[in-house]
Length: 109
Image 1 (cartoon, rainbow, N blue to C red):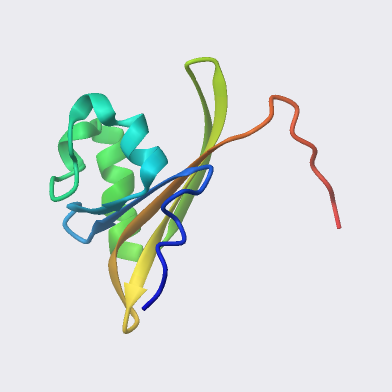
Image 2: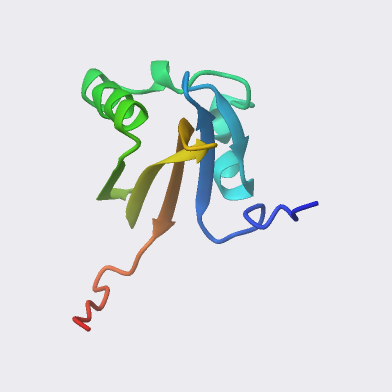
């Protein structure tokens, strides 16, 4: 059995299926959205605006990835969304949200 390696990570991890139903949230994701109650088993689609819904739909259709930064509650975060696959077929999306330093170093290697 694989351990729940994401459970106590210092970033929020949310996983949904190809219909947008939330299958998994680690501790930080649950804490982030605690005011919305238990979201596992619920669709994430109604929580997003039309632009975001189009991005989600595209990621599910193409198996692609999306990344951007936000500022929320005084914290700068990077959001990374990517399709996960099962037997080569898109099965849903994973979103990882992590706090990043205001002046994060960038290296060219």
